[in-house]
Length: 241
Ligand code: NDP
Image (cartoon, rainbow, N blue to C red; front, side, top):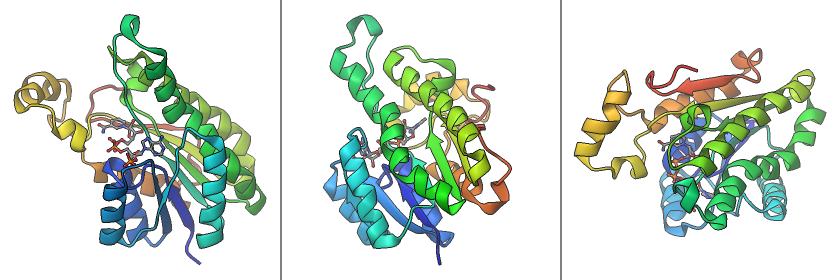
């Protein structure tokens, strides 16, 4: 039977590339999303991957949603915590809403999504959890105290949970992408991209979502069973942690 994988925020951007790569590799995939029904419907029609709508910052919705996925596809073997948002502002102008929305969606979501499935993984003696953090969680970023704090928290979560889970066949790893060519980054004006962004990246290009998806594919494979608690930087050499 195919292993079951859940990808949060799996209908767009990096998450869509991860969902698609997992499906192509033979996994039974569920992609979750927040509210962009049009994008989710298009993704489902193009890939055949079932989509589930809930808010990763809400524990009850995550618990109920994951229960539904398990009823439809079977127990969750692989969890990719990918959903994330930015609400940038200099800290001295940041609102409580900007702070809490980002912490809830990028960090508290890891509790909300992982807690409902971790006991099953431990009981079955197999699990793969991959968290998508960011280069900005490693080095900090101007205008992103909220995002940097949340993404840094994702790394700490990964290392602690990896220690707790290693003896039960469950690995937990984190990927820190640099600039990836998603819609958001592609919308940056060409001049800003060429003059300000690319010079910071030694390989002189943006990363592709599929390059992050291939990192996930490796980390969830049986071949990666000895790798846990690790932080994989995929940033074109921009930051060598
Ligand atoms: P996108 O904005 O393209 O897609 C985000 C996905 O997450 C969407 O499917 C969205 O759903 C979903 N989502 C957002 N908020 C919630 C929520 N509250 N509940 C459930 N789902 C939610 O993001 P990217 O592909 O650019 O980023 C993916 C991950 O990679 C994020 O964690 C991001 O921080 C990280 N990252 C991205 C980088 C980049 O250069 N793009 C660089 C480093 C890290 P919907 O479609 O309904 O809105």
